[in-house]
Image 1 (tube, one colour):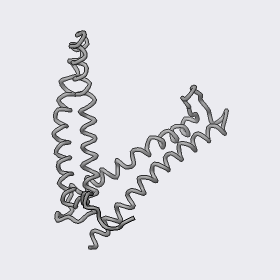
Image 2 (cartoon, helix red, strand yellow):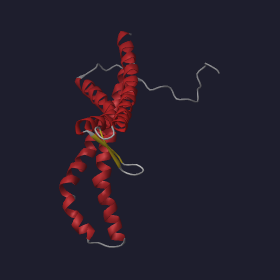
Image 3 (cartoon, helix red, strand yellow):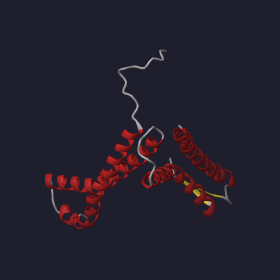
Image 4 (spheres, rainbow, N blue to C red):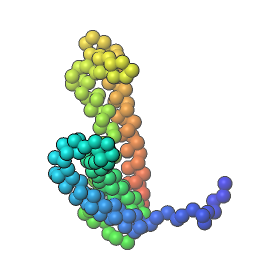
Length: 188
């Protein structure tokens, strides 16, 4: 395998380019947030009139309504995630702009977003321990209590705890590499 750079591959983005990309994503977040809020306020009462339609008019109205109700909030979340994680990456590369409060806020948001996938299995395990029962819904719904079938109950709680540990470990691995890169960038 050759170690010479391949001219066909693009060069990695600099910190300033990533910062610019993050700013554009943040602007897109706020630009998408306005129609999302207006849609939540003004579009909900229009569903009755859309439901009364039929045929192509209903399909078009329902499609546009669904896009506004589901698509716009999803686009806001995606744009915000892109802004936050691109800002983290911009801190790990050389850039001319100093680290500001918005950088710190977006890095904090990225850290919180990294923890979100681990929260769902953690909530399942904690809920099972607090309630004393756990329900497995696939392929057939079964409910196991800690007093009636403790082996299966604790086995399922352990499964959710392992899922939590795995997802939190992935987030920790990512952040460990980012902190090392940011620290190395600040020293140079």
